[in-house]
Image (cartoon, rainbow, N blue to C red; front, side, top):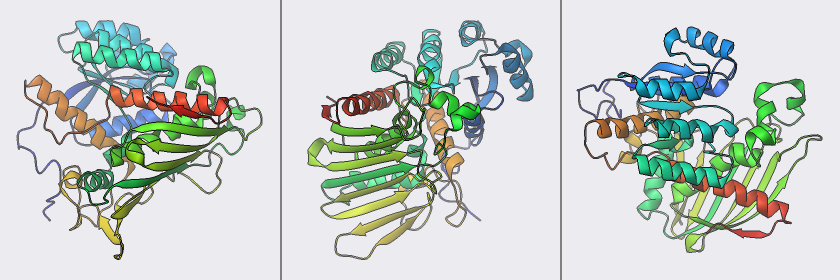
Length: 395
């Protein structure tokens, strides 16, 4: 069966050499590290050749051995890795940083200063000053500093963005976004569970808990699809679980450029919700609805007409969605494929840089500038809530 929508089918038959990838963090027991590795390999653009995979040297080297990384390129620290790899003729070209939040800034800065491109997990940093520093450094060095707001890699999210940009919804009026989970409903961090421990520790996660972990995803998705800038917010951040140091439930009112209004709810204490990211956008001419747990479907309702179901790779899907789809409509794609699209878009940009060519205008991925906006959002939400849920301007 021909797969007309496949991004790989639509490209040249010439295959560029795999990009040499390094990784900081993501060793034994780290869920997100495995996700990044799968995403990097799905379209065969990268080869993992080096890593500083854990803060404990023994665990770092054991993790590297499990992944087939040569022992000579398994490092005890990201500092030594950046120095050594930048000196090698075949050193890494790009590094993925998949550590707890507090490591992001120092690690990203070390590699950017060494002339190595960066793919960093979100949030970019734990404070705005550091985020601005990385954005400035990546610009000065002419290096990519991508941030894995991975939901922008879903084909139906690209479809939604294209429809909004083309005016299908008219003037945007209302933006509703929510991201509820239930995994922190009880004090999981007190049991020693690694992922819960660092995400609820302000020294490692930063000033935001739920708002920094998943609220920032919801915010970025809303801005990406609508193309609107957030101008003001009013936040109520709550900590429901006794003994927890950071927020676990977030409710925020939003005022966007152009007059649109919105609301954001993110929670990690909502039993029955696993990863229920949902976006609804309504304009003067119609509305769109997308759910992460049903990612291959996008609902579009022109005002006064019946709701239409647009499916990934289906007859109503457009070029923006089709160029990053791999399989026919009746074969679902999901989280890993969406994450892989971010890696593949970065790879296309890196290959263009290597070949001295201009990056295709269709290529899209979150950059350090998006990372700065995400950290600005977190800081503003915390400030608003701390000061009695006052309105805070982001500009």
